Amino acid sequence: MLSLIRHDDLKFNPLEDIEMEDIAPSVWSGPHVGKRLSEAMRTLRMLPMRAVQGYCGAWPSYAYEFEDLLAQHEQGELEKTQRMQNRARLLPSYSDVTRMEAAVYWPARFLGQADWLMRAVNMVALAHSLERDAGWVAAQCGYADTWRDRHDKGCEVIARGLGTAFVPVF
Image 1: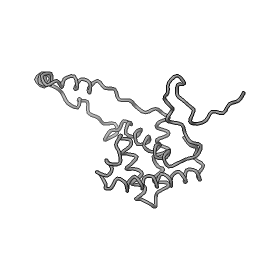
Image 2 (image 1 turned 45 degrees about the vertical axis):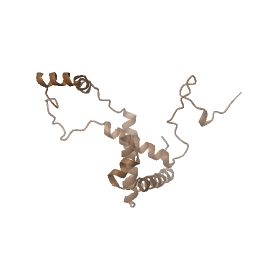
Image 3 (image 1 turned 180 degrees about the horizontal axis):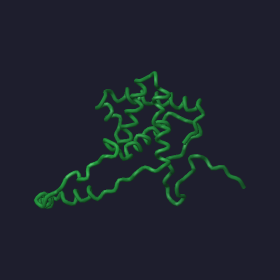
Image 4 (image 1 turned 180 degrees about the vertical axis):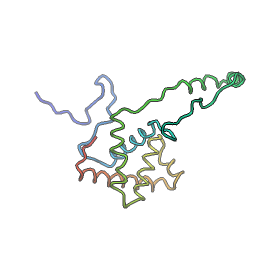
């Protein structure tokens, strides 16, 4: 017997009660465009970049003397410093970079004439990639509700443009 599975019934693991959050809709929508743009900004931030290609310093960012380490140990900061020095930087995957390259130019392509919408879409996507809310954008630029409304309107325009250009949903 063939049974149809609804979009709402899909789960990552049927034994857990956690739903998959990254299910692409059948057509582009404003919230989905906003999500993809914030993912593109997050991926762009994860890419390794240098100031001048081919040139980098051989010295660590800071060389600690014994007295510095002793003072840090007394203040309880030594473990924190060691954790920061031993952290590994995760690089984005090939598919993440490909999706980022596809999405990062959407505001310029579809909102080129309306630069106030393009700026709002980019600022709110950047805020979401930094895990900040619209209040952070408001502290940077002005009223949060205005920026959120402009972002939503810009994402809807981009979604319509992606639909008319027959860009596959991802």
